[in-house]
Length: 325
Ligand code: PMV
Image (tube, rainbow, N blue to C red; front, side, top):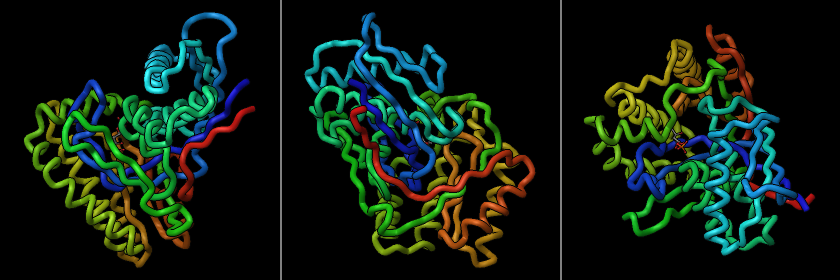
């Protein structure tokens, strides 16, 4: 028997940057995200016919580092689900750029734990699977859920995260236009970057202390479908995270020239009356969240920015799912 799982990346509007426990990968701050549709990781998982090692290929290639992280994730699943060891073979197909700041690992781990669980007869709840995915990659917990998602960081290291959908994708359909400014993988991964920021940025403690306010503001904006309010808090929170990154030692500059130009384009569109705001993660890609009616204008404007190599449009999508095949 094989299981086919699919999961989508999510984009944080109130960002996660910093861990309170590196071993258990517990975030220092809560976050709020939207799960996308269209950009998809599809992962087929089955029991290995021979061998005692978990295997993973991504788009037909084996990357030893990713394979090792998948094996750790499967091990954590076996412990939580009390499942006996049987080696697993996983094949992932990803229809968007990998490790380039588009949350491929978030969708990837959400798909892995979902597939493993169905293969083992469905032993864990969605929240338990989200916690496992979150151990592998903090933001992956959010890709287990669809629509607008809230991830609550625990008060201390003895407690787990909590995650849930706060508003479904169809209750407030928004569009996301992604402007890719390079297909290169980022130089400093998020785990390393977060630790660098925690240890060296003079703004890190303030960032952590102010996060609850930003989360509450974003959740209130989402509940009342208040686009202006969501735009204001999302851009502010994103720029604050990048201020922490930039003020780390050495400074983490994830942007390139096209990223900065795209920020100005988005703000220019807003001045013209379009409902759109930007957010940027640990990479140079711009994600513009907009009213569906503004999608074409936003996509055209971002495609026109020198240095933008690809523009992708999507809507909001569901959490991870799996079926036997
Ligand atoms: O889940 P990680 O370890 O890849 O960290 C994600 C960090 C950001 O994308 C920059 C912010 C976020 O909340 O997704």
